[in-house]
Image 1 (cartoon, rainbow, N blue to C red):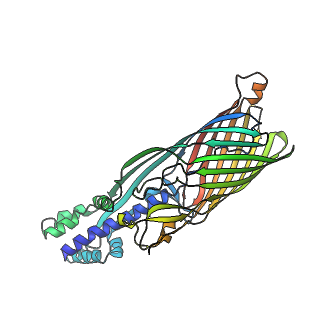
Image 2: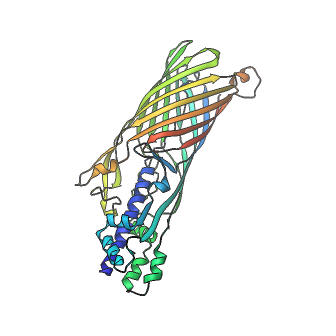
Image 3: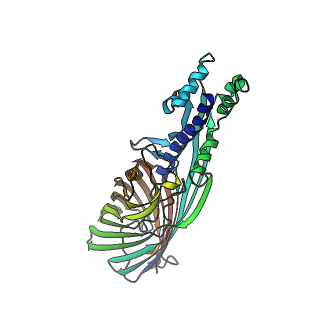
Length: 421
């Protein structure tokens, strides 16, 4: 009986370890990387060119909002304690092992603890985006940008708070070889072994730099008056980034989308340099096809390589509501603050086989609430007064996704530099 318990426990513990790790990875990969090329609703004069350069980096990606809005650290979110109580719930064979150890007296089976399996996942994302915009008319500006993303992640697994050493002292070499092997179970090693057997790339350190999805932006001012300007903004997302990788558990998998975003904005100009700009918009993502590993049921949390399938993906649209208050302190210095809420429903998947394509859409419904603060320095006015060498603008923006569902609490630091000629 000990031999059967030993073999089954390796498989059960490895599978449950991978399930919890996989849930972390798949939800991390659904962080949709999207940056607007031109943040403010404004247009360039006809014939004026404006090259720009954006640089930004994200922090706090190791913190995640769950579906109920609760905030967790990734390593704590999916950590699992393999004590007797947990093992008896997930495996009948484990209950037999506990009963067998109890037979030796002092309830040794009830207090066995293989330890807590923890995942230390440290992702980082930064980007550099050269952008070019031109005023087609005095009321219409077009811009194009190509964000270059640097993505790095380090994954470590470790166990802690195990009491197996005391069991080894009592039983190693005194009962039989099979019990010795069971007590030498290494959860981390078995997890990595199962990942390899299922055809996934090894875990560890990953660093990538790639061209993300390019954007083409159109800003049209269809009403202009002293108290109010109205704008219609369109953003086309082009699938120039890497395609979905079904073999990498920590691949970013947030590029390769074709999208169109339509937005209306109104800029109300108040006294003393104050202004208020509300936005409302909707982003539509075109259906496409990807190669994905499709689960056969809800328990199949780590599909094997043989379950790859070309599936049709329908990415849900996203509603965007934003309000921004700005204050022009001087002709050279201005400040602004904004609040944004994004809402996206669940994605849907379909295919030709008899598989649970619906499970691919788990945790893809998203809600985000974002606060931002920006300070801008401009030499445009001083240039026309011949007080500066050339006209340019530079801003620093801090934004924080402080509340949400199925998203990471990411903070962003961004610097933008733009010139005019």
